[in-house]
Length: 259
Image (cartoon, rainbow, N blue to C red; front, side):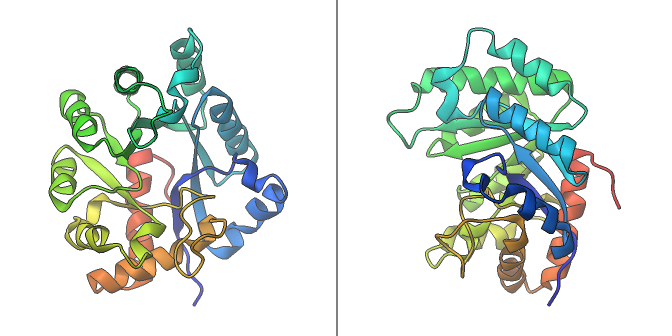
């Protein structure tokens, strides 16, 4: 079946995994049903690349931010540079930002929290949504979201049903990607089952997290229907209805033109 209205709310097409065939791939996605992509930066350099891609492809938007894995390498004037990038007309969010306590080589937790909080405050100042990365840092992530109440999405949501419920109460969206199709995805399945219709976004996080049956291979936006099919199975809805719903939600959050 051919699907339409595929809105990828979180991609990294600036990644080197796409260097060999980026232009060919991105030129082909619209004919495979992809209507919009939000390409997310992870540092100042990749944020500029995301903006450049959004300038070249009409169905792209960009997000700019400092990922927690990049927090230890920021220049002294990173805030000024980031604010300048966020003024670009292709920007729809501050991201990818957040906390990652999984890897010991990442910046110390207090440094991550400081940079995350400053970016939330900047997003609130500029009235932009945030795209939040949360890995093994649920408590601190939720504490900062409670304190500052940004709009935005917790991408690749990995928390409990209870955390999902609180995030929704705070006005956040939840991004769901390939991991919901994995065999061990018990909690993500319960989260998807309980998630209000107006809070669901679909994403790839490409080139990572390709859904079954492509797990372990390079991901791209054309594979989102496999995620939609799994969510439809869980919720007792049709895959195209899930795609339509997620598109509408993403357009609302990112304030991109509806078509």
